Image (cartoon, rainbow, N blue to C red):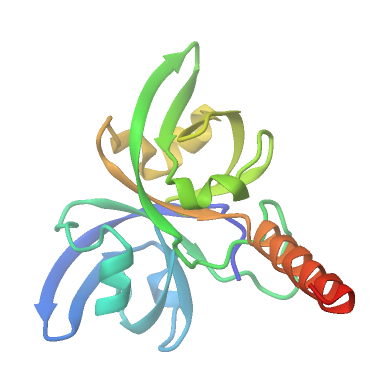
Length: 205
């Protein structure tokens, strides 16, 4: 599990295309602390460390991961947001993030407002019901609060530290981003659907 509090923006050092997926080597300041099998959120996708050295680590992207993400288009030199899995005694500063990308959306707006920034993102119809104004959403692994919400898009306010620490500083209108909606909303929907089914069963409908 992750919190959406990005530790740093790492660099894609190498990309290898292989049968069944792609392999990435990523530069990270904490690479020497990683071990095989650990989980790292890479721009919002939970990936497993295959190996590491003092300055970098490698991950393999299955065909399913490539299909659900924009990792099929990343190249050496690109920036990705990195967060290690939350330790049991860690401080919970963001929100519950699984690292399961729901969709690849698009940047629709980038505006500087004083020292801050406003970013807009597209919102696929199938996910709109899980997003609420002032609620939490994960964009490229960053825990953000929805500032304004429309039927097919939403805006977030980005403070300078987030802009400078993450890959948002490299994003432009039209660029892809990973979106993960709040999993708690999904559970609530599931429970309500089940309750409705039980009631209908009792009523014989």
